[in-house]
Image (cartoon, rainbow, N blue to C red; front, side, top):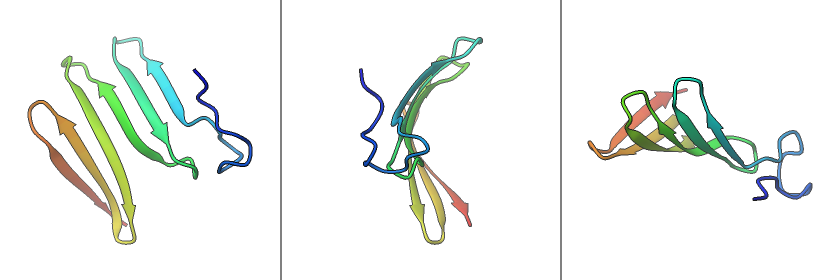
Length: 80
């Protein structure tokens, strides 16, 4: 797997576009960054053993996070 982008493909400070991590309590996360190193999507395993998928969209008036989960989808908004 090659998570790093070419040197000329976006922000030089952080070329890694995919992050896979696990924590000490049994959780895990898969994170995707865009060319400006902003988090655009991530999938997380929570303490309740549920997996949720998040899509982030930056708008001029704030940030929207679309949460997809088995128990239902949610739209969260964070004004600027």
